[in-house]
Amino acid sequence: MTEVCKEEFGTAVGPVEKWTLRSASVCVEIISLGCVIKSITTEDRSGQSADLVLGYDDLEGYLSNSRYFGAVVGRVANRIAKGRFVIDEKEYKLAINNGPNALHGGLKGFDKAVWTTEAVDNGVKLRHSSPGGDEGYPGNLNACVTYTLEKNTLSVLYHAQTDHTTPINLTNHSYFNLAGQGSPDIYDHEVTISAESYLPVDDTMIPTGEVKSVEKTLFDLRKPVLLGSRLKELPGPGFDHNFCLCSPGEPPLERKCARVVHPGTGRVLEVSTTQPGVQFYTSNFLDGTLKGKGGAAYSKHSAFCLETQNWPDAVNQPHFPDALLRPGETYTHTTCFTFSVV
Picture 1 (cartoon, one colour):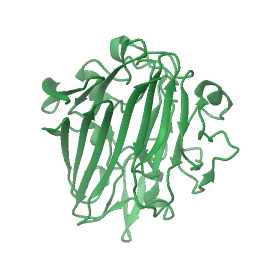
Picture 2: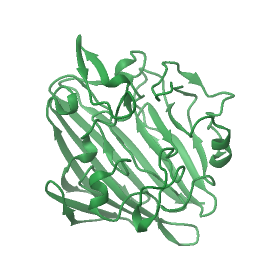
Picture 3: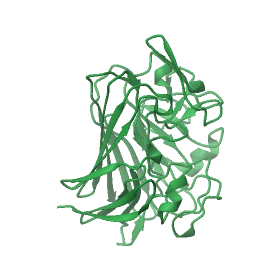
């Protein structure tokens, strides 16, 4: 059984809670502000414990959290081109907060909300209601995220319903370093992503519309790749790309999508999801100015994200998987993070 307990973490708009989920091998802390995964602690092959996710020691850091450490982002994670989309011949305009585009739900997205909580078996359920017009999105949206920890697997279950057709794309934005948060880089991590294709992007990081095979490209991560050497070869600052896990129209079956190994400690992270894509991001825009847990300076390439989600800008690209939630439907998907050692 998983031990589940709750305590007060501080006060934002209202009280912010911290929930701790503890199994024999993994301990996870979650706060109600932003539905944030605050910490994930596991042992390495020699029995040494470390926290594997970047973040802050106290609530004050999370009140700004400009890099979305550990947060659930929405209504729409990732980028929407020019902050615009059309539903039923009506154009909607969003805040522009990432170059010329909209990113991660806007200026005050789901990562800034204090979610309501309740205990469930082996975990915690968090809820948030987003009113019609919130950040420019249509329809009242009720979202629910459930974190459960069973043995060495953290499962994240997402649900949402709306009274007006709206785009939605929820994901968790945890930054991982399997050597332990605060370690200087991820160059010694070996990464595998089970994707046959990826989405090339323009210079504002919006997909061009092409679905490109990874074959004979630097995006072929189907076999383990040492990140340091691959990042040296890759043009640009690093990975910030969607890897396609299925074709548009395929049913949402759970599939293993990624495996990351840190040979030095033996820690392994495996990710499975029902989502059609995973955004692999190598913290290209951290620059050492943010001070995180224990005063650690988080620098470029000091962590990686595996954001399971729909394809970026899908609301504007009809041949991408459907990004719209309609009245009477339930948005639902599951992602699992499994921790082990080799």
